[in-house]
Image (cartoon, rainbow, N blue to C red; front, side):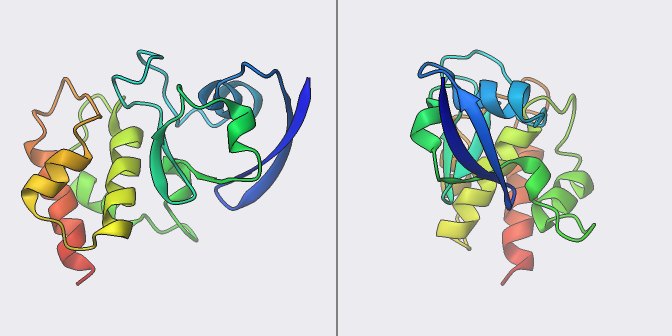
Length: 154
């Protein structure tokens, strides 16, 4: 066992892991962040997307030991002081949430996009979320919600 430190949603956690534990497994099973979903477990669906040091990553492909000392944000960490993040509000307003399984991962991909490109085009939004599979919405409401959140921050 190895002891690592993760800063998740602004709080530091020390946790024991094996060298082969994935970040998604540690976040969900050891730290209780069930907003990070598991889907395909081979990096194809994006439901486990979190940000690590501001960049979107699929946590099922990241070994937890590689995240030692890194800043991890999950969808739960988007809201501050009881206030929803603009992305969360816009997803609700645009009815971009259907079953909700993909939503945390899509939110995190969108958050990383808006941090690096605050005013993306529709094509840039579509590219940023292309690694997130959604079987319910058809993506149009998701794209509109992200564009609206970007417009709100202008």
